[in-house]
Amino acid sequence: MAEAYILINVQAGKARYVYEELLKIKEITHVDAIAGPFDIIATIRAPDFNTLGKIVIEKIQNISGVERTLTCTIIHFEQ
Image (cartoon, rainbow, N blue to C red; front, side, top):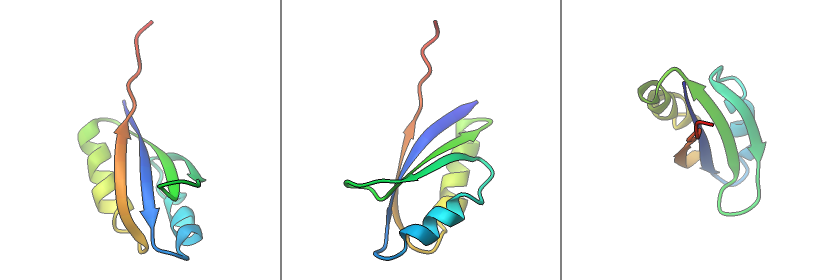
């Protein structure tokens, strides 16, 4: 299983629209609007990193209002 945080910059006035569109993507497990250098953070889960990357490129980056994304893969340390 591959997981990542997607940090998203959006066009002014588009945060709510992008937020709502992200919630429609089944692989996204959580979405928050945030303050700081990014506008939205989403958590995504996919079977592998190749699929995860395709979702970012084909679904998230194609949402109207998304300007830029930064994908931060999650590393799970084994106990």
